[in-house]
Image (tube, rainbow, N blue to C red; front, side, top):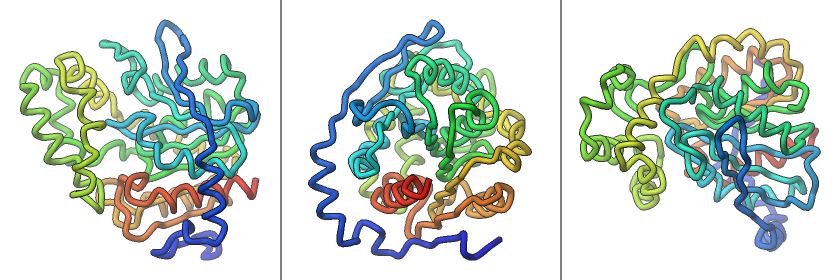
Length: 312
């Protein structure tokens, strides 16, 4: 692994650069809109920032399991200086998008929907950014379904290879949660309690995360929400992500890998393996951050993405 291609962000982060004060005032002027698109027979919801900048070179943000477009709220304004249109998408079964049950909400099912969305929005030369399962979806799009539209890839604490979920996050004993009868065996109040107990383990600032946790839990606080969540978990299949593992080595796209140094859910060795396997990739390790690195270190994540985009 070439040392020059590995960067460890200092604890102060890129947000401390002298230009950040000027960027903040620019960020406050960035415009965001919530929009919807009809794809296949589903409604997908997304936030667009800087729509007036045009669709070529768009930055597209894909979220982690349990998340949604809301998880990028601290990242979006910090990306405004990149001077590109940005889309933060609620993938199918999340946020304000449709929550169909039953449906294919595997990483391939998500990628299929998003491929149609990219065509509908006429997005070209996309910088595709994925966190967690969003990173798995991004890998499928960049190597198979939208490879002609995706120009560059950013993988953040992503699933990869045969590692599609952490053993005990966002619920305990995740393997057991994949059993077909699990939704019927789980009372809704027990599910909510387990999420409240386990979700904060993904952050290095668990007490602060608990104050913002409702956004992560509210979508699943109904019988339909429970069924959809277990559907998402059931479809975290190792062979689905491993199917494109060899493609990463030959896809020929600039790739940035961002990882929280203290990620207890997706271990750092995964980042190092991806960095080794993807030629000319760059690895940025963020100290003091866990798996929920967007929450733990938004300045550093946004700074790494801005720097990467600026080099394209």
